[in-house]
Length: 160
View 1 (tube, rainbow, N blue to C red):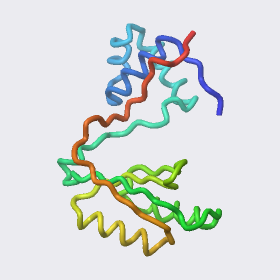
View 2: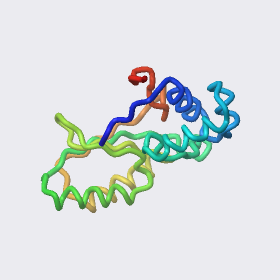
View 3: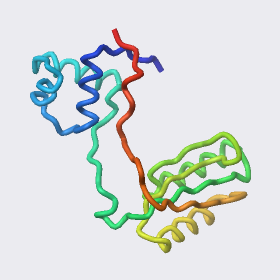
């Protein structure tokens, strides 16, 4: 994958859109001090190059009754391609899993879940262990969310 080179205006546009993807082109162009046409062309180029992957609406989990965040560490019983595809399929079909990573170190996989309560977590756990052979499953329940953002850091980007 080719890394995209951005200039200062691109970075300002990305920063504005990460803050609020519902902004109109007119609003973005005002924030970044650029004409609407130039701003629109840059946004289109950023979309076409894949820098802007998609635009989403972020929901408040607490208002939807999903106040419990659970981090599930998995140690795999095997590492074959077939087993991995089976795990991927099972996890992709679990809406409670909001993030899923293959890790280095003592843990093979890390899942982040958003659930209503311990009973809802237990139901996910049972579906998981029924569907895939695992060596160990360990869970940690978040006591407090101190920082959670979808915004990527942009200050490090090399620019023209």
